[in-house]
Amino acid sequence: MKEMPGKAAPGTPPTAGRAAVVLLSGGLDSATAAAWARREGYRLSALSLDYGQRHRCELDCARAVAGTLGITDHVVLKVDLAAFGGSALVDQAIAVPKGRSDEAIGQGIPVTYVPARNTVFLALALAMAETRGADALVIGVNAIDYSGYPDCRPEFIAAFAHLAQLATKAGVEGQPFEILAPLARLSKAEIIRLGLDLGLDYGLTSSCYDPDSAGRPCGACDSCLLRAAGFAAAGAVDPRLDRFPPVGGLS
Image (tube, rainbow, N blue to C red; front, side, top):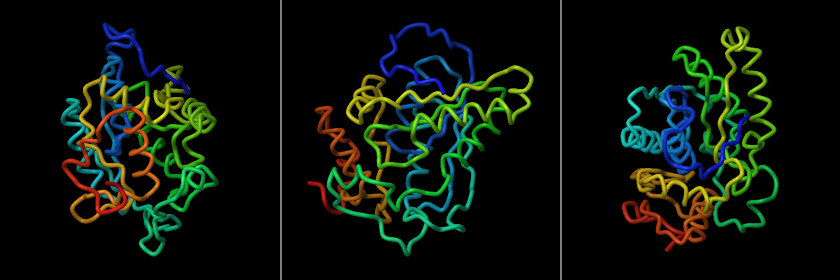
């Protein structure tokens, strides 16, 4: 894994001309990672996954973000992880936790964890990267302000980078893949400030795990609370809330 600094200087980047595949969920973190990669000079392709998530409105957000970033090679791939169940994000019978304290959010692995999701997603992005001749994958994982998911940790990303060298034609032939995780060591507030510096419109992104049919955030799930705390700490207003007032929880 290569953790890139979140505040790289503007100008002609050393990576100009290189190609990368970005995992673009439509959420705040992945959009910021994509905007960062564009600023660093990568030619971007994007992969979004329709995996049976209850918050499918994020796919429309991914399309909107890709459009504003000028990413024309954007694949939305259907992979039905809901067939396995086991997570509140793909199983309607499991309730999404609401109104949890900061302490509770920071403890253990919540029921919103989707088993092996990032492993599956990175594997698909790796396959896409080989077909596009890209030598980097960009993922917006974060190991500070997050909900305890094991597949967001730097150890996991580093292990996958090693796997990418062993499991691909490009890797075996000496063309290594980089896994770029530019947000890994940033707080949510730092991520938001970075995105605002990059001119990213966060009103196009959705973070809620349990939005209503119109895409309005619930305002009370872990992801909504982390997002709200991040904007507050960054001293910024979340433009998503102006366009889609929350159903409840946040004022």
